[in-house]
Image (cartoon, rainbow, N blue to C red; front, side):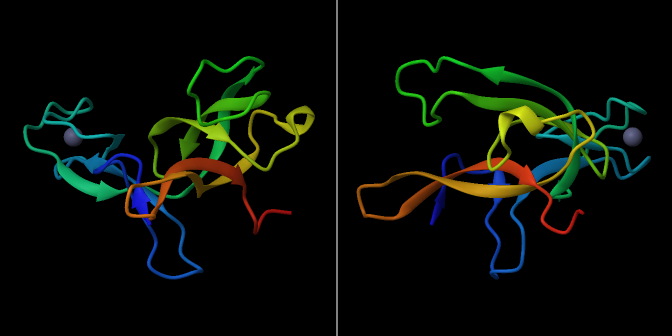
Length: 137
Ligand SMILES: [Zn+2]
């Protein structure tokens, strides 16, 4: 299995572990950010460490996509959301496994992997999505 882009997320080693996005954590104030940063946006500290972000969050806002551009790996209609992770950062993601009429702000979600294609060697290439949190009631 291979990520669609190196350095974006970590593929879990066991069947019970969830994938995690890679982010940054400020060693001074412990604020976390999505993606890589050189300077902390909270306290302006220079030098921010790489970290694994929480795979859990809630839907912060969302929209429904009715038409997909040519070459898209998603099939319309589907939902795109901004998810607020439990450790703070907000990330943009496609949602899967949620009937569109039930998507709502505040819905608990978790990160998952989605097969998008096979590479030349036959390996599964995966992207990340978020789906309803399995342990939520
Ligand atoms: Zn900081």
